Length: 276
Image 1 (cartoon, rainbow, N blue to C red):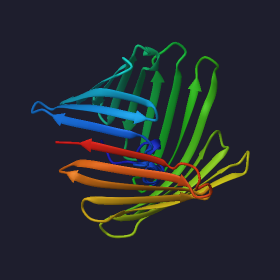
Image 2: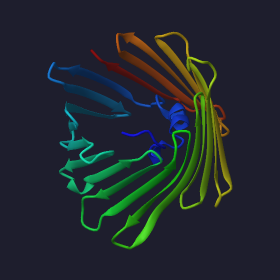
Image 3: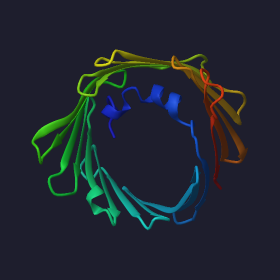
Image 4: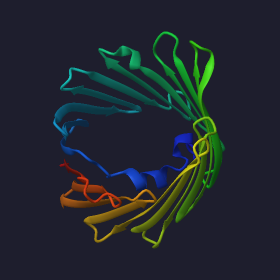
């Protein structure tokens, strides 16, 4: 793929990931294995409250084709095929789920030095069509996305965004919810090796004049352990501890509680990913 501004979904993604990734509230165990032929097999068990679920997924890559298949305990079968460079500078993704085949989608992404284009079409009668366009460079980008419902002939969603990316920082402004919500975020690495980072995000819902301000950060205590924290103006405090226990296997412990209502039971999650 040619270097360019990236997809519209990449605008503000680094800051959002720092504030959300690893903050879990369920119990999860995943075990992955890899064969010499390039097949990856992953078994996952999740317990959320009184409900327990599980799935088994298989991934195989051959040349420019990536195939994924997943079967869960509710008898759902999900398949995804990704084709890279069938046409130069493109990526095609086809997904289908059984027995609910109406959730199938076909996505085509096109990458250019100064523009990216993504189109997603639902594989059903009267589909919803999602279209996004981003213009710029890897440093500066602006873009927009919209969803068109063919049954009603109306736009059901439109969003616009702009981002600025530097080697150790990035900033983004996104206008979403049909212009009703504006969000600004900024992330900065505090050291040259990018082991410590700080992030801030503020969003305002114009129709209700509701503001949410969140600050957070991450710090690599050593080469095996990483700690993350976040706090918003509503008093929600979250913390994550990630530790590499064996080789590439990672243990994640997360907790979140309301500092304005300490009598409430905090949310607690733990995940263990075992990799060979």
